[in-house]
Image: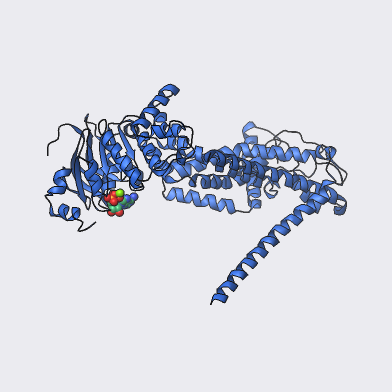
Amino acid sequence: MRDRRLLFEFAFRAVSNAVAMVVVGVTLFILGLVFVKGIGGISFAFLTSPPTGTMDGGGIGPMILGTAWLVILMSLMTVPLGAIIAVYLNEIATRNWLYNTVMSSVRTLAAVPSIVFGLFGLAFFVTVIGGGLDWLFGYEERVFQERCLLWAALTMGTLTLPTNVISVSEALKLVPDEQRHAGICLGYTRWEVVKWVVLPQAVGGILTGLVLSVSRGAGEVAPILFVGVAYFLPHFTGDVLDQFMELGYHIYVMATQSPNVDETLPIQYATTLVLLTLTFGFNSIGQVIRWMHRKKMSR
Amino acid sequence: MEIRERALQTFRFSVVYPNKVVGCKSVDIVFPKNEVTALIGPSGCGKSSFLKGLNRLNDEFGCTYTGSVVMADGTDVMTLDPYELCLLRGDRIGYVMQKPVPFSGKTIQQDVAMPLLASGVRDKRIIRERVQRALEKAALWDEVHDRLDALSTALSGGQQQRLCIARAIVNAPEILLLDEPCSALDPKSTQLVEQLMIELAAEHTIVLVTHNMQQAQRVAERTAFFYEGRLVEYDTTQNMFSNPKENLTADYIIGKFS
Ligand SMILES: Nc1ncnc2c1ncn2[C@@H]1O[C@H](COP(=O)(O)OP(=O)(O)O)[C@@H](O)[C@H]1O
Ligand SMILES: [Mg+2]
């Protein structure tokens, strides 16, 4: 009996350690490979100049700018909207069938494959909204009904919105109900409870969640495939009605569409390293916010 | 039983939860001004439901009410609109919960000043004065005056409950409701809070829910016995414990059931 129990304990520990080591090992191997193979390709010129030839030369300047703009525009739309929706659902809305329906659709939407959002973006933003705007302004040729940065940002925003709502909701749920009751006891209105009790406590979690979900969106390629990203452009115009290049899509293009994939490998590694660094940077910002908030709450 | 001045009175007051469970049923009671009144009774008899009905905290659970709760100036709490209700809770009826709930992330100073946010007091000097006065009345000032910028959650349980009392009286409400305020406290802190309630009765009308009959005898001038949602007996504490009129009360105070 005693031996059996100890044996199981030993086996359990051995298996979980082994699994953990495999996961960490694989991750480190991939990161290390990308770093070693990519770091040589990185230079100021690479980070600022456009690609040349059949993607086997030049740099990734326009893609960095395009990705940055895409993320900024998307965040401007999705961050405030997601926060407002989550606060409404969690703090104001009564828990009735409508609430349950909305909540479960949000959860479902967060699990929909990103390519579906891409198709939705094409059908809704480009064709319906874009086409509608062209008709409204009486344009003969297509102005709004074109793939562009604006529709890509809105599509990406639609993709991250459900995740935003969920991550903000999770942060709000971490605030114990008794804190809200204490606020009600002081004569606060619902909104005052949110403003003076809940948000100050949840702000760290909210910001962390938002940063993480935005960074997740920034790494997606599928949703922008049909709505604005370009195969090749000599430079980034900065106009929201123009197409743009993007880091993730560029890697995809080099790996699959280039006439000579092997020639582009060094650039692929360098571009991947840049993309990983950006994502890692985003995540670090999230961690720092979380850490600062925790420090403030337990001074 | 003679009552000189009335602070709060209920007429056939009932609280019903949305699942049709009756919290309390047709309660008629008068709370005398500047006295401590204890509500006792076995667990689940409706003490909390009744107490939370007095400032309509039960609204949060979707309760419905019948009857009325009337303040000294004739205000019927049951007819107030949501805004008036917030004013009532903020300025006229303070409430202290069973478990101390300091606001996390707030300093002692900020925490006690929380009700002043809603009453629109913005002058820093006035806020500091009011907070100090409330903390003094709550017998906490001496322990915290040199660390008002520490987090309120860092206080001990007993100190936290006194902080909650300070917070509840910072707007000088006429009435203070306390729902088993000592049930989460150690004996020493319990003694402090009991002493505090007796002192606070000089300026506030106090309604104290307690499951502890000794506590009722120590602090309350009058005691009301609840059973299954009804007010069974209401008398001076002395009469209630020495000479109960109802058999049910007598059985309860000698510990036949609990
Ligand atoms: N939130 C609630 N929803 C439904 N029923 C409740 C709720 N809170 C209390 N009750 C019921 O109301 C009755 C009185 O409870 P309560 O007022 O908490 O009693 P006490 O404070 O005397 O222990 C009990 O039957 C209890 O189950
Ligand atoms: Mg109770």
